[in-house]
Length: 170
Length: 436
Image (cartoon, rainbow over all chains, first blue to last red; front, side, top):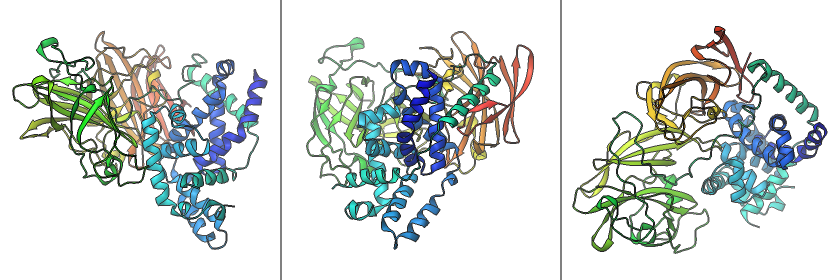
């Protein structure tokens, strides 16, 4: 059973880290978030392994943790102004990098649930119903949060909608 | 390529910025530390009690989808007489008490215009049109394509309206005129579902005349997320709840407002007119006359829990719809909540402006008493969901004497089988409290 959990951690860490990075905008916070979700998964590993629910549980836990965590940690853990400033500074020289930083900064300015909805819907490619299930909310909430998040992203990073992607993000 | 495709590709690119590392050793260490902490805190028993605490609570009622309540408002006033709530299913027919049950879900009536005074919600409700709508099976037809998150909507709107079967109408006297009246919870199904409460009169041969919206579907300052309704002597008493803006959508704040049909429209006759704005300092919060939602990771695993309550002079009574696993309120139980103590201060890893709330919860049906200490903190002008620190029956304690915040920790004097003891609790990086 221990070996199976170890293998699960090894196999799922890359995908979880990528999503966690989008949720937190920071390498170290992403690692902490994934680690915390996996530690909690271990508490129920025997049941989860038996029912083949470990991956769904871990992901769900990670998204829930992200919100409660974010609400309790100083936002200065990720310096949004610094990210925005770096984006502006490199804009003339490396537009692709600047746009990636801009997207990252814009994501971090979303409310936690909006950010989670965006990552689940547009990175993990979950349906509205699947997203609602992960977040324990209604499909209506997913719809409205998605709409609000997209509207805010377009305000925060208008360049995302201006030109084809290929020319902007390498 | 659509904007959403651009976003998808952008997120995929951004995600590749993370460096993939092997977390196995860190996870092993975390498991070891977790086990040690749990053993230290609760003497090695009931280790699974909070195992699922991070997957928060019970499902909330759907946002914007009203759930009329035949119970009584919980605060301030004596329990009002509650109007009869009658199922709407079935055809028009004489019903109990001489009130006809109307099948609103298969009827035609006028939808009034939606308020347009709030720019934020106007953007989202502009697709909710007005005029006569025919409902078939609880839903009116969509009359034009949804503008796909890009207001403005087509003139007159075109969204379908929905009367969910689980949201039953309330029959009551509303306009003071002869004839029967009803309150019908209704949702505009657009980007999200926007709930509202419509007043109607039932004319001869079941003709329906619209009295109007009882209260604006969404008011300023963010609006509400769900509501319960009762009627007391023509006053519509509405419990409005705002939900946590985190992921859980659990109610964290509640208000009671009263509306009355006067001079051709529903007008507010009691209660606050809007939700409070952002909180500047936690010391500004009068917790004894504020609202608390008993929601948060692990809250319902203790016995001192419930729904959202409104405190008046530190006391509230409620019949919760939410029942935890900790042996507190059971279906139908009336609960009394007393906020006994509030301690403010900085709690490391939890919040510079934290509040430690000590509650006594009494189950009035059998006078069973439960005590619990919760933490909340001010973030971005809002109070975080409650986080439990100690509770009777949860950590082997028999009661809570008092609390204080000291050197970044929470010091709780508890009663145990061995007498009073002073325990110190600290928050870990995840905001979970453990005994130090």
